[in-house]
Image (cartoon, rainbow, N blue to C red; front, side, top):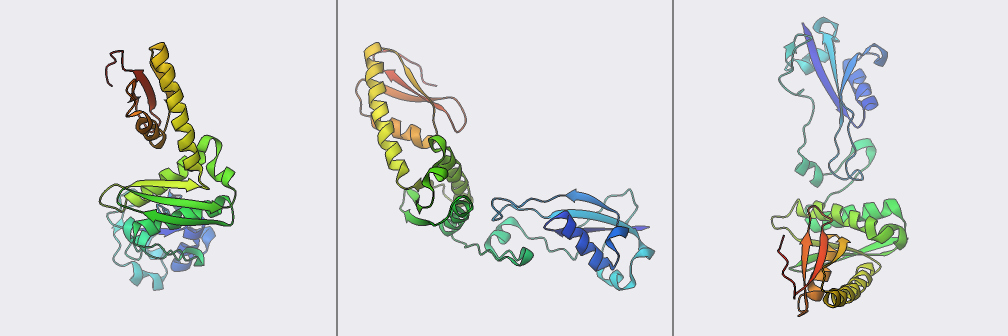
Length: 267
């Protein structure tokens, strides 16, 4: 008969060290199976998983002082399946872990219960990992939550055509709405970039609407995120000569401007 033991830690090496200490056996004598290599989650903030190893030892090979601690574990054949988790492992749910302190390796991360505060903390850590001296302010109303980042290297935070900013906003939106009953619009702005982009998109929409009317053909603006599509829709919603439609699937759907004197089916 053998005893199957599982040990969890931040990584495989620490899990082996933990097993060595608890079993009072040298690491070089431990034969283990890696069940999971673990992951750090989003910037070490949430969604992280611990590494897990499994060690199987003959029951008579266990140190005497270790037997009382594992007496509740199931003894199984070497090729069998374990029925339960070890009793000495604390299994924390994701929601509990997100709201408590992470004491791994002596680092303490405090996670507020409020989704907006959580989003701000996650955003600050993301920004701090990219640049320095950036400050975040938050505005919230019934329609949206607006995070404004000032300072630091704005160009790096925004990225080419706003792609880095879009990715950051996607993460923060998921963090906030995962912990809210009703979905809320989340916007992240860097040094007023969104307002500049809004003005440019409105000008582009007006110019292409005029062209669509003149040539009597639809014009595609190509793939756009939901925020940009909304700007164009609103800019042209009262235009008597054109109408807008979104086509395609996924986060980067295409937006098309149609002249109203042509009959186009909606998709």
